[in-house]
Length: 296
Image (cartoon, rainbow, N blue to C red; front, side, top):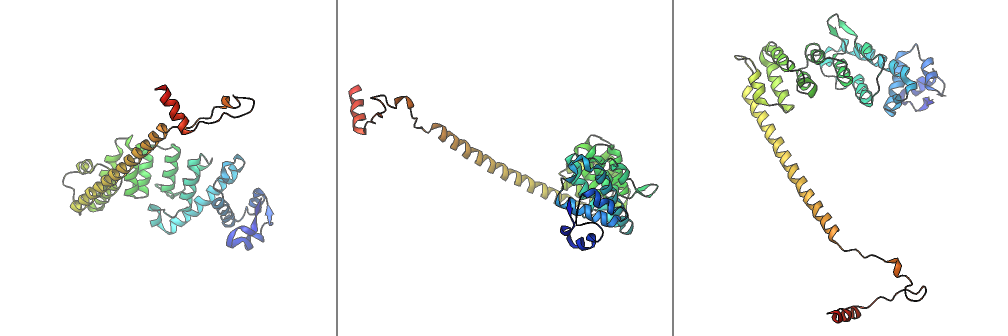
């Protein structure tokens, strides 16, 4: 059951459309002709309980939620085309990142994300690329083309080409380099090198892969920045490694002291050994010393 009174700023408006406390299917049925209100309701519930779609009974609700999000996001990209290459605030991408790693698989996933702006361009390239990568249902070439050609995002294309899935296809990285060499007069190559340095790539190999004669603005500064960043990462790693070794040595020393420390054991068989339930009297220090001298 959902309580309409706790659904945020639009609670008073929704209370005029659905009863105050009803099952979710009943509420969705009452809002079937109101996509905006339905999306608001589902987004509010999902933000409060990201595990709600773990139940198989809500599969149809999951598909509907995905369709509404995809439609709203595609509409936004049509009016704000620049957002297609950097959907940092995309509710759809956040929804996919929250559900797909948990094993939730909407039946209409690819169909919902395959809306097109034109016969050659997808309306949701980055969301579709992430979904194909997360579910292992797309080829590396298809995913790279979504990042590089349709979303026109060199940093994301570089990140994917240098990922384990991208490195499995040796043709992806040369494709990224050749695309950058032929576009934007060399500025894309500068973006490529900067993104590769951020991903921890071997800069020597990256520079060797650039065609001879290609002009890269600010190449020296980029390489110096990359080398400086690499050295700072190495220093950070060495400091962390040294700290971990010190903590390991301290822990091993403490455990060694604990193992060597003597522990007093209580022998229950001595209880009442001399005369019924009378406890055995413990010898004093002087008595123990005398007994030891006698044995010597």
